[in-house]
Image: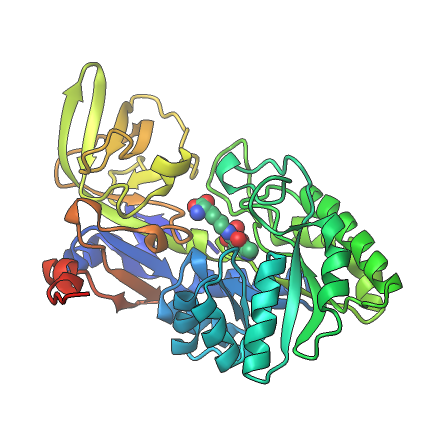
Length: 436
Ligand code: LLP
């Protein structure tokens, strides 16, 4: 069931009126639905049930401690890409062995920390990284589990050019023809358990097909490695599963659309004792969050209706960075003006066309372009949808704008899970100077 819905012209998150909530939180504010996180997690687990994968939620998509805690309660482990994300996961109470540490540039100190706390596995992206992990593990007299990330070179996985990771020449993974050599060099180390192959081909991926192409490459490689005496017991399929942004030409893709064909492809591997792991982020978090913002000003610029709101690219980078389209609509509308869908491109007879801009001194600080909206006035509350993933986590303080609060809704309850930053927060790390 949709957690964000209009009731008598008023937008609710679960059973909380966002108009009323915004009176208390002020704006801008990120608001999340607990139920959506839980439902998405459950649907993913159910869809992939036959493979019974370990689910490692991708912390980078939405990493608030309280969100991590709730997903851990659902059964998720965590996929982290930095010492900071590892710290978050541990602070949220996630057991280190349920964390996999990915990322193309893990610093030495991050490896030392991660091995010390005993993370479950590393997704390794280069020969030098593996050599460093081997050295650190030896120094700590530990044995660590490793998934070698291969670049399956699946070419165009139909994602945004800035988020394609499964193509030769991108910085990600190890080219597959070098992987047997990696196992030969490191396979005998008593400090490494090279048990797994990892792939992540991009984000978002719109269908199962690019996964299947990559899985074919990975399975072939696993077979080569087995013949060389390096049996692969686990495959990590990465994340990237597309969430619905409401666009009519990119309709909702249910978990089963991915899970069905992927399960088919991996059935023999699992039947022979192999295990799987997935690292979803966006599909779990994207539609769990909206960003509430107030209209500061409306004006004409040439022939365009310009709406200036109190949030922008500092709090939601995606439109500026990827030209991504997020559905925007007033949180309170008169009868008959509730949205008919979540399609950002929907056109409504009699509605004016607006551009929605942020306050930042950059022309790319535009949250929405040429949108057909009910009449918009100074003081109106707008909701920007599908920003649970890669929203707050990518927020900055550019232009010295404090970051917004985060609120988690559960039924009729609303919990402030991150307070609004203050001006003091902006300068905190600059107050003490010392010669260096
Ligand atoms: N695993 C690995 C190794 C990844 O690099 C990523 C995302 C994921 C899992 C999770 O992917 P997801 O299921 O969330 O699609 N900032 C961009 C997305 C960057 C994704 C980076 N890696 C955006 O706003 O669209």
